[in-house]
Each structure stands twice: as structure tokens, then as C-alpha cells.
Amino acid sequence: MCSSDLLSVSPECYPLMKKGGLADVVGALPGALAPHDVDMRVLMPAYPGVRERLTDVSTVGPLSKGFGGDARIVTGEFGETRVLLVDAPHLFDRPGGPYLGPDGRDWPDNHRRFGALSRAAADLALGDVVLPDGWRPDVVHLHDWQAALTAAYLRFDRRAATAPPTVLTIHNLAFQGVFPRASAIELGLPSQAMLPEGAEYWGSLSFLKAGVQWCDRITTVSPTYAREILTPEHGMGFDGLLRLRAEHLTGIVNGLDTTVWDPSTDPYLVAPYSSRRLHPKAENKRALQTELGLDVRDESPLFCVVSRLTTQKGLDLLLEALEHVLWRGAQCAVLGTGDPLLELTFRKAALVRPEQIAAVIGYDEALAHRLQAGADAIVVPSRFEPCGLTQLSGLRYGTLPVVSRVGGLADTVIDANEAALRDGVGTGFVFSPVDAHQLGVALDRACDVFFDRPRWQRMQRRAMTRDVGWDASAEAYREIYASLRRA
Ligand code: ADP
Ligand code: GLC
Image 1: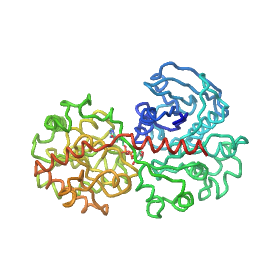
Image 2: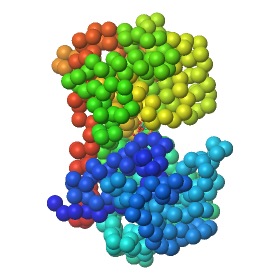
Image 3: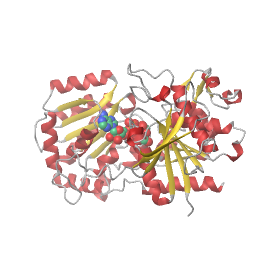
């Protein structure tokens, strides 16, 4: 096996900046790939406070384009991972989120901000900026639209023929990085880049389209989603384009960072537990019910949600569906933030039935762990789900997933139908189509098994011993990198 030097380019990386599962994946990949002889370094923006968390820091640059100010690379260590930051204070050093300002709207200069991230990746790939230890990537791995313009910069460089190959991972096709056509000039793209067979998208510029056109390989985060996005139903306008590149598209399911998500060592839990010592899970449940003001009852099936509250996640279906099971004593605890109307709806439901429904509106890492440990089941009724990570942590914590049959949810949860229960393979409850009635039926089925305690515990143990780690998927990425280097 020969080693690879990988540059992973992303707007998020756990725990330095996280809005969703993208951060978890980008944060876990370097550690997952290290045993496969891949030296992966992560390039991300220098958001406020990130630089301060690195050790052994040094600065190189300037970068070829700063888009309105000076830009450099700051490199340092974070734990075992070498992190490279695009240090451009005029673009990244401001209060607010990575994508949205304090007013909840997209930053108006997002094209420049993620153009700068992509340009920095191209500078590193082409050797225009060299790190203090002389490291240069031999493959560049781009994550989502925010990094995808790198492919255009490399494609139109006069040294394109000798530039390292690129992989684009689509974590969510719903986000396509679309900006007015005029921004292409500002970003230094040549006019050929804006042809229909280039990055032009319905008269605008799409960063993601640049990546889809010009990356050597495309991956997405589950085999089912890889198939779904080739169809008009799930292709979000990109299906035709993706079909043209189908032979270069692979679905690789995400893993879970099993050091961060381990119920036997999780520092956030009141009582650690494992598949062999399952009974302390009940203590976590009681603590959670107490914390959230729910009735403290072992015999109530407690469903939880840990999610962004958006149309994607299908949580607008949950309250109606819960009517199927609240009369059976079920409880539901929601942790999430997003759509203000949904936030309000959950808050109201919790006010009306505080003993059965709890809603915590916000982002809270520690509570996410306590919910996974204390709840009996986790609900993920997504309309589409490229992979999903909370059903994986649910499996690992014996918190059985109730999921819609889409994308990575379909690939990672085995429905406990009669046949599966007989064969001893079911790990959760899978429903389709995605509507409130079918979700309600699935919740009801979960309650049936919950009240049959030995059966439920057998399912929990099975779920907890399923392999949800990174090994197999890291090997799949390594193979892609190796094939690109050979080519
Ligand atoms: P997505 O990336 O589409 O939001 P994933 O399931 O892939 O969905 O990843 C979501 C990640 O964010 C998980 O690690 C989950 O635990 C975490 N998460 C989501 N919402 C919250 C929240 N409100 N508080 C804490 N963690 C959250
Ligand atoms: C996206 C998807 C989610 C996936 C995550 C990490 O945010 O919505 O399904 O798990 O990326 O790949």
C-alpha cells in the first residue's frame, strides 16, 4: 500500500465549527484514514476563535487572491489532525454563523467567502503556497458547494494537466451555491467557465455545478442517495448532469466517530452502559425525564428527536403522527433549531402536554448525547436524507431508530417486520411513503415491541453491536484516492 497526501476542503470541521453532519464527517475522516496510510489535512476558514484552538501555529502566504483584503494560510495542530485555515479577517472574522449573518440571512458576500476557500485550496494544490514542512497534496477532496469551485480554478489553470486529481463529496444536493452570473468575473473565472456545459446554471453561477462538471470523481454519503439523485424526484435539478457522470459517482455511507459516541465512556451520561450491561440505560432515562420535566416513568416509551428543524427532516409530520401513540403513554423529547414556525409548534405542544412532550429549541451538544442515552427510540422521518448520523448514534446507544425509507436511513436501519424479527436482524422501524399516517403506524409498531420487554432488549443489543464505525467506508475512500493517483 502506498501512502497518499490528502487535502480535505470544507466549510465545517467538528469540533472547530459545526452546523450539521458535514462537520462530523470531515472531523472524523483524518483519524479514520490514518490507519489506511492516508495523511489527510483539513482546509477550512479561520472563523473567530478557531485559530486559538490550534497548537504549533505558523503562517504562510499570501494567497493569490484575497477578494477584498489580505489572505494567508495559518497552519497548526488540532489533536492528531493538521488543520489549515484560510486567514482572511475581512471574510471570516465576524460574529454570526458560517453561512448566515446575525439577521438570519445568507452573508451577502458568501460567493467571495467560499470562493476564497476554493481559491486557497487551488493555491495549495498547485504549489503556489507551500507549507513549512513542504507538504503538498496528491489528491484534493472537496466537500459540498462551498469547496466545489476549487475544481474550476484547477481546470482553467495553465498547469491543469499536472494539477492533483479531485474528489467531490455531495453531502446534500439541496445546497448548490448559486450566485448571480456577474460574480464569476469577480471570482476570476474565465468566460469559458460560464458556458452551459460549465458552471452556468439557469443563467447564474453554481459552485456545485463546477464541482460536478470538473471533479475527477464524485461521491455522496450513501449508496441509496447515490441512486436517488439520478432521478428527477430527488435530483433537485442536477439529475441530468449527474446521470452524465454516473460512472464516476459512488455512494459511500458515513461512519460514526465511535470515540465521540460511545455509551460506555460518554462523559455526558449519568450512567455509562453497553450492550452487555444495558440496565444503566434506565437511569439515563429517569435523569432525562426529570431534566425535561416529563413524567418520570420507566414504562413510557420515550421517543426523541435531535435535528435541524427544516422541511428536509419531515418533522412537521411528527405531532400529528404522535397522536397514534400518546394515548399509549408515549413521550417525546425534541431538541432542534431551524424553521421558526416548527419551533413554535413544538414549544406549544410541550406547553399543552408537559408530562408527555418536551421541546428544547437550540443547539446543545451535551443534551444531544443525553437524549441518545436516555430515550428509547429516535425519530428521523426525513423526506430525503443523504446519509443521516443520528440514526447511527441511535443504533450505538440502543435507542432504536424510527426512520423513513430514504437515502442513508434506508441503508443503515433494518426494519423489524415479522420476518426480520423471526430471523433476528431488525434494528429499527422503517416506513414509507413519508407521511404522518405511516410515521404514526411506525411509532405504534415501535410501541408494540417496546411493551414486549425481552424482544425490545434483543433488538437493542443487536442495534448496539452493529458496525457503525468508519472502517469499511475509510477503505472505500482510500481505494478511490489510490485509483486516482494511479490514473
Ligand atoms: P444534517 O447534517 O442534515 O443536519 P446529520 O444527521 O447528518 O444531519 O447530522 C446532524 C448532526 O448534528 C448530528 O451530529 C447531530 O447530533 C447534530 N445535531 C443536530 N441538531 C442538533 C442540536 N439541536 N443540538 C445538538 N446537536 C445537533
Ligand atoms: C448532510 C446531510 C446528512 C449527512 C451529512 C453528512 O448534512 O443532510 O444526511 O449525514 O451531510 O454527510
